[in-house]
Image (cartoon, rainbow, N blue to C red; front, side, top):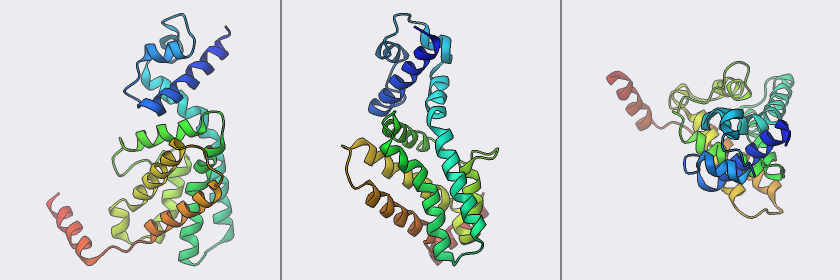
Length: 214
């Protein structure tokens, strides 16, 4: 079996099993077997360990999502200043739509969404910023001026990101439906509402007290 075919089968098996059972609940031996590999060291040879394999799963899908999100952000910046409400929904769409397109990707797209949700639950609120020209870091920078300062300090942008992937993973885990366009549009509405959420006086006061103690 050609090395390229072996790698592809291992990645496909990993994304499916990680999605169905959890990243930490599947052994590398099981992934190796699910990929039809008789050589018990094939996975370690190509990826090193679980982290290397997980990185390969993400790398399979990320370029397409990154390219589409950067395109939407380019279009947003080219339009010039928008009314705040319109700007928030446009940016919410730039966050949601590239990932939501994976619902229709037969090559592991739905499994990828379920894996991404698991990863986001492991991240501290200040992440992800994916630095180095990544689309999420760029998105966070463009959204920040539309939010109250307290909302930025409360990581409201991360809340929007996590909500996006929680809902996409829930959708990906269910049987395919015909109304994905409606689902996606409504998810954009919900993410827009999260970005537009006001910080109450009570929350601002408690935030200030926490920051004074730290």
